[in-house]
Image (cartoon, rainbow, N blue to C red; front, top):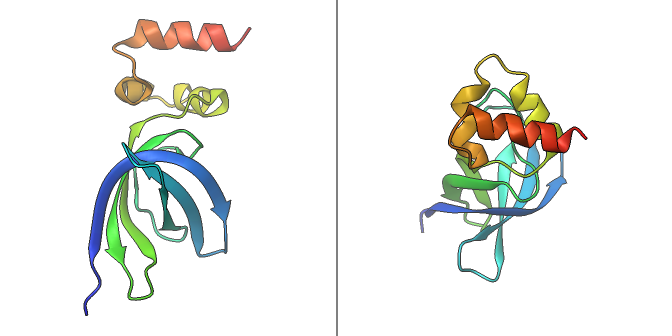
Length: 123
């Protein structure tokens, strides 16, 4: 039987560096009680945007890939849907010259909201 594929959106519940090759994430799909363990290759870039590492707990990501015969979910594409509420991450994004292009991933409509968030978190 051939490997099946997967394509879903969910929240990162757990994250574990399992090897130099892979990062293992437990991703909980909307409406599901159980999470799915997915494996993200560390050597090749499968994440978009690639400007910063957004794989933090509570981030919402869209993962696509294939399931191997031994049932491992290997990610071939991972897109950021919503940033984790992580101040280190937010500061990292704000340091980018094109940070405004990421306001939607932080659930913001505009630059002003983003600035407010930064001020709130820097106190």
